[in-house]
Length: 89
Image (cartoon, rainbow, N blue to C red; front, side, top):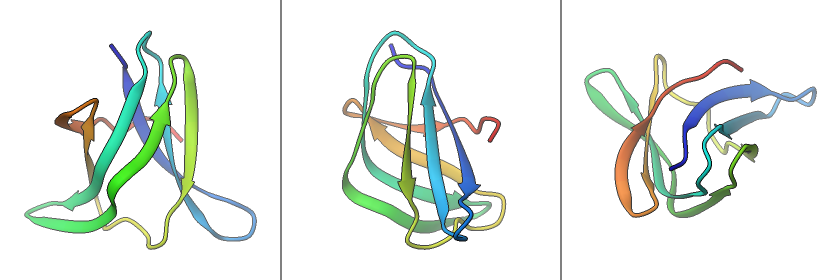
């Protein structure tokens, strides 16, 4: 199974990136990724396929818009909807 954690970092040019780390032995296929803020839905990162995070690796994606304040990240991972825990940047 994959073991995922996410963070947001900022590149020197000011763009924000979603970083997803997989410390597990299984791959993760991420689809329908969206933010959730306390008490409400947040912006959609992508309604379809975001990409794969292979075992023991990480991926970065440029965010079109910043996450809401105190965000949670929800995604469909390998066909199952689940929250992704936040990790260290």
